[in-house]
Image 1 (tube, rainbow over the protein chains, first blue to last red):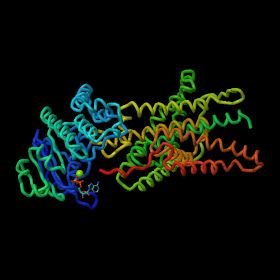
Image 2: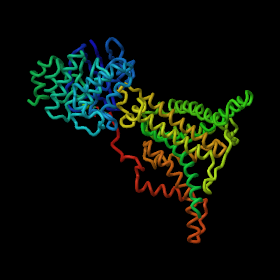
Image 3: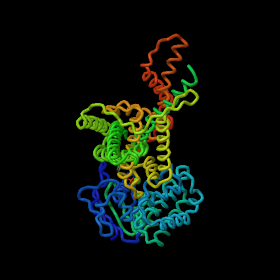
Image 4: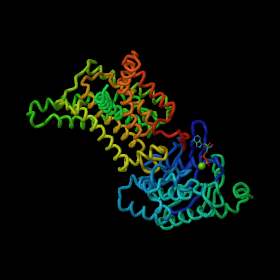
Length: 238
Length: 321
Ligand SMILES: Nc1ncnc2c1ncn2[C@@H]1O[C@H](COP(=O)(O)OP(=O)(O)O)[C@@H](O)[C@H]1O
Ligand SMILES: [Mg+2]
């Protein structure tokens, strides 16, 4: 297993967001966690990124290493886990190119970074056209492309994606997901996708987990989950 | 009331403005990335001035034994400024590390109070170690006065203004053009997701405190050249006034801090000739000791009309993960 999570608990002050969930991902897989608003999807990704602390009994290993020993910036730079956060969180006061360069902050391979930036521009040609534009002035779709591009540059052994479909038109959504699949196939990047749009997510991923009120209630192959009566009723609109 | 008189005041205002601007930058930079005001910053200015005094004295002693011709006064001054900036940067780093980092997630009021405590600790440590007497700052360069069409300018004043402007320009270039400057700008926009870029928040915070403290040290030494008597409380009123400049400039704005620093210098200095003009025109008798009252009432008025300061933005919602 590339990522293995056991008994993950997350709390914000008194509010418990995750009550001890387990999941794991193999190298090269695309896995999704679906769940309603407030189920704890974002908290799960934040805990893996170490942006929020997890409970005392929580165990997380990544490629055989104890994830809990790494501060968040080293989860990116040393373990190779990138995270496209909910709401994209671009640096709106920086240009598109600066946003990409900042994502390479900890990388020492200058040539590699330049090549990767070119590749991002290859995948999302709109970004190339808007290189010198401030990220905050771009459309939602362009911003999502930049958010994915930024993650691609910062690290790509595992990419954590928090609702990348949010606010995108179906057409743009499709483009973003096709690009993600390309990255997964050409780079061997493992992907953990978190979505409210369950149908989209289960069509994209090989396996899925269902999160409800901070508990993992179901998991299985995407095809099985798409056929599951409970999942259909609760998440696929009947 | 002549043109020359006004020019004279104009030059003095530039000098005062330089001090305020250099110190205000430290408040603004720290605020921009951590959303807290470092209320120990005025005392870091004081510490910087004293470190400058120590460095200058040491360098002078060194030169005294090995031939003064080797190190001319201006070179000692340059060295004093550079070495003191470097040393004071560490004071800033330590303050961040012990006073603010443990409180990063605490309520802002706790951090503010901690800052005030650190300020008191710095002041009283100074009294403890140096006895609290006022100390004379060594005059490293000969004072030369130029008479430009009836306006008297000293070489020191020119130098103080030029060095200050040079430092501001260097900071501007650093923030615009370097990788670390870019990280600072990004952190000012959204500090919560900074680690996701592989950037250590602590490193950027330490760097920002270091730069702000180094600038305050430069201000302290320049101040020591212009007004060569240092005392442990020199950072208090100066610090508060520079803080006013930081607010006037707009919370977290680097450009704003510079411009407002100079503006504050102008308002303060120009209030005195303005009082004199008013007195003469209307046969009034306003004492020039009312300077600060009038000057800061003007600042208050500006803030009533521009509550976010000159370059500040209206407050956006609180950041949350
Ligand atoms: N920064 C936060 N502070 C306090 N509570 C939070 C915060 N983020 C999320 N929560 C709470 O944690 C629970 C799970 O939220 P979240 O992980 O964002 O769910 P999801 O991403 O599935 O919508 C919710 O009850 C939410 O209100
Ligand atoms: Mg969420």
